[in-house]
Length: 242
Image (cartoon, rainbow, N blue to C red; front, side, top):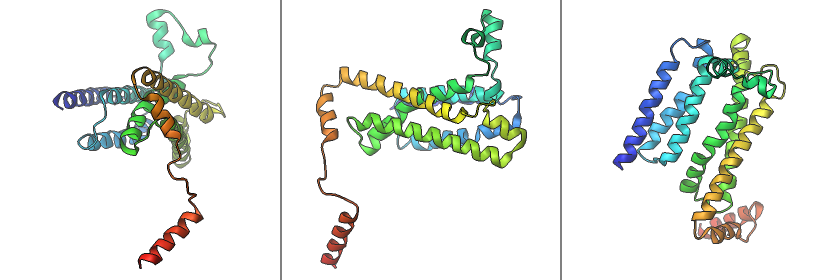
C-alpha cells in the first residue's frame, strides 16, 4: 500500500520536526528528557510494528495528534504551558478567568485527549488481533484505556519518588491538588467513553450486521465452567493420552 506508507512516513517526518523544534531549550531539560522516555519507546514500537501490523490512517493521525500535544507539555512542563498567555496576547481573552480556574489545566486537557484520541487505535488492535466483536469491541478498548491511564499515574508516582526534589515535583505536576491522579484518570476515561460512543454510533449506522454481531458477542461460547473443573479435565485428558 504505497499511499498508506507515504502517509505514515509523512506523519513520522512531521513528528520528528515538531520533536526537534520543541527539544530546543525546553523550560526544564531534565523534565523534558524524563517526559520523553515513554515517547521514544512508543515511537520505536510503532515503527517496528508498522511493517508487520500497519494501523489505519485514522489511528495514526489520532496517535500523531496526541504525541504532538505531549511534546508541547514536555517542552514547558504540563503545569506551565502558557495557553492563557497565548490567548491573552493574540485574542485578548483569558480562558482561566472565564472558567474561574486558578490552576493550569493543560494537563487535564491532555489526559482527556489521551482517552479521546487513543481509544480508537486501541480498539483497532483489539478487533484485528484479539478478534473482539460486538459489545466487547467497545468495552475492552475503554477498559484498556482506563488501565493504561492508571499505569501512567503509577509510573509518574514511581518516577517522582525515585528522582525526588524539583524534578519529581515538576514531573508529577499535581499543582497542589491531592486528587490530581484521580481527576486525570477520570478525564481519560470520559474521553475514551466519548470516542467509543462515537465509533458505536457510526457503526450502528453503516454496519449492516451490527445487531446480529452485538447479539452474538453475548452468546455463551463454552457452557462448561473453567477453574478447577477445567484443570481436572485437562489432567484427565493428559492421563488418557499418556
